[in-house]
Each structure stands twice: as C-alpha cells, then as structure tokens.
Image 1 (tube, rainbow, N blue to C red):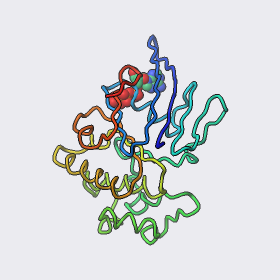
Image 2 (cartoon, rainbow, N blue to C red; image 1 turned 90 degrees about the vertical axis):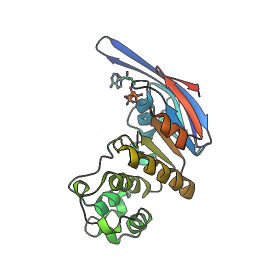
Image 3 (cartoon, rainbow, N blue to C red; image 1 turned 120 degrees about the vertical axis):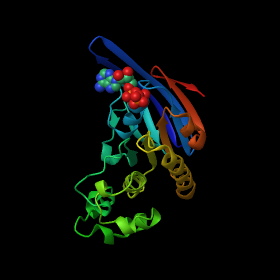
Image 4 (cartoon, helix red, strand yellow; image 1 turned 60 degrees about the vertical axis):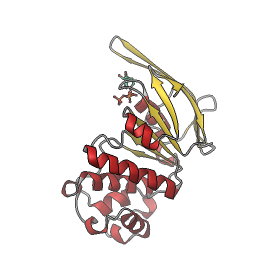
Length: 222
Ligand SMILES: Nc1ncnc2c1ncn2[C@@H]1O[C@H](COP(=O)(O)OP(=O)(O)OP(=O)(O)O)[C@@H](O)[C@H]1O
C-alpha cells in the first residue's frame, strides 16, 4: 500500500470551525487529491509531511507508520522520508542550484563547499539537465528550471513518497503543459509514488491514476 491514511482535525479561526475528516487508502503510484480552494487539500498534505498534527487517526506510507494517535506515534518531519514540493518551490535564494539540491540530502552528507561534486547531486543535475546552471542562483534561472531544481532537491534523499502542492501553478500555460509531461515521465522512470493536490482539472487528466475529490474537509471517490 503506497498510502493508508485516516485523519481527523478540527481547526478554529475566529468564528469559523473547519472539520477535516479524511480516509484514503491506495496502492496507486499517482494519486491526485482534487478540489476547490479551502477544501482541505493542503492540510492533508501537511499532515502526511508532519507539518500539521491531526487530532486523531493514523498515517502509513509504504507500510511505515508515520503517525498513529492511538499508539502515540508521531514521527518528526525529518524521520518521515517523504518529500514535499511547495507551491512556490521554496528554493533558497542565496544558495546556488547545486547547493539547493544538496540541501535535500541528509545532514551527514551535506557539504556546502563543493555540492556540485557530490555523487547524488551530480546525478540529479544530470537527470534534470541542470549542469550548465549548477552555479546559478534561483533568481537567475527560468520557472521551469526552478521547478526542476525543487524536484531534484525533493528527490535527492530518495523519499518513499513525493508530495506535490499545486506544482504547476507558478508556471505559464505552455510551460505548465510541458512540465506536467515531464513529471509524468519522471514518475514512470523513477517509480516514486506521488500524491499531488490541485484544483486544476488538467493536472487530474495528466497525472491522476487514482483521483479523490475533496469537499468541505471530506473525500469522495471521483
Ligand atoms: N491554522 C488554521 N486555523 C484555522 N483554520 C485553518 C487553518 N489552516 C487552514 N484552515 C482552514 O482549513 C480549510 C482548509 O484549508 P486548506 O489549506 O487545506 O485548503 P486547500 O484545499 O488546500 O485550499 P487551497 O487550494 O486554496 O490551498 C480552509 O477553510 C482554511 O481556512
């Protein structure tokens, strides 16, 4: 099973209460959570990554328990072995492309001085055709290149699952189409299970092998 998740969370803000109550289990390699803004997609993704703690339930990825309220298990973000690709990619502006990718490595092997020489960093620079811009900074490269750098940084630690938050929203239309195809090809090549959240039907079309629709904090099979 790629993922087995059942979580509840109640969030209060001023006079509003939002109830998240999500249960999904799938062994698909490409899962898409699809739904309108404010439906609970990001909260679900954050719970898997360990950035939001559910009130109750459990989360298992690849058979590994990341969270289980009843058993008192709540692995730290660094222990979860899942990669999170943020909507705006969250690259470090003061680090080069190679340094950004190296940052995704576990602390023991992180070497800021010569990251472009690290075998794992070299592998991803080559895989994403980023060698020529290895020493550039994020502000000096294109949107598509930035996305590839963010993907490389997410994948360099060989995660059990790749979590993607609206990965194409920052790109213009033509690039979006191309990057969708790139991501689909990449997923086929690497066989890393991915879970993507989006409100864009074109993402569902291109990448959704298994699709769940999220409405008002709950799922319904799409
Ligand atoms: N810290 C918080 N406190 C209170 N309410 C919150 C908090 N974080 C999120 N919410 C509420 O929970 C609901 C779901 O938020 P979430 O970010 O998961 O939506 P989403 O489906 O990812 O939307 P979008 O596509 O706009 O990012 C929203 O109504 C939001 O206002």
